[in-house]
Length: 101
Picture (spheres, rainbow, N blue to C red):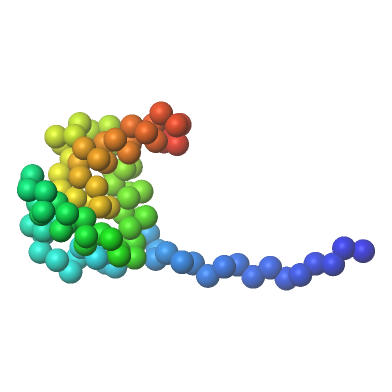
């Protein structure tokens, strides 16, 4: 006879999709921090905001879906610790792997 143990679902570890943006680290900084232009130090400062963000993975997923195949010059700011060209490279890699449609 096979013994069954009760299954307890794991508690959710990420906030609900409807409110994750409220928990993003970038909501606590001035918008211009996340739109740094081309100065490397400013870009690094924007990426540092994302470093300990509790919703980083949700942010990355949503920005990749939202921007889709937009050209690099149509992607603005630092989002999910990536610049526009870096996000385009991620999207292209995921597309090649068949991870996105």
